[in-house]
Length: 79
Image 1: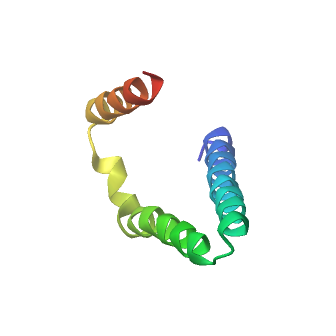
Image 2: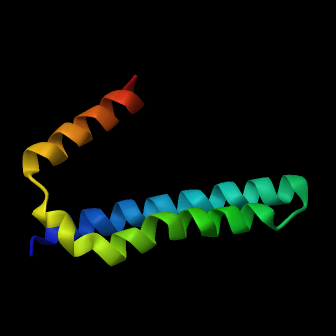
Image 3: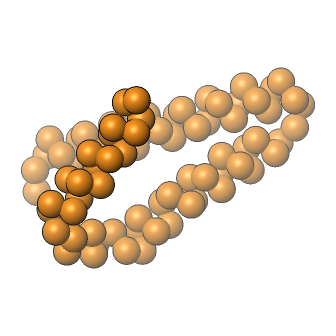
């Protein structure tokens, strides 16, 4: 196992979770409601459940397909 990949994965996961928490805190305080917390929890579950359930099969994908999909996503968000 490459420790740099492990630490990078932990870092980006922590960043995304803290970003979701911060946004839900701001919106919840602005609207005096707990619904943003529910949406944040739903979004986290929507991402993490499939990752944990089928994560071991991700390594079976061809690396060229992963690179192509990553390039499209990065180009979309970079535009």
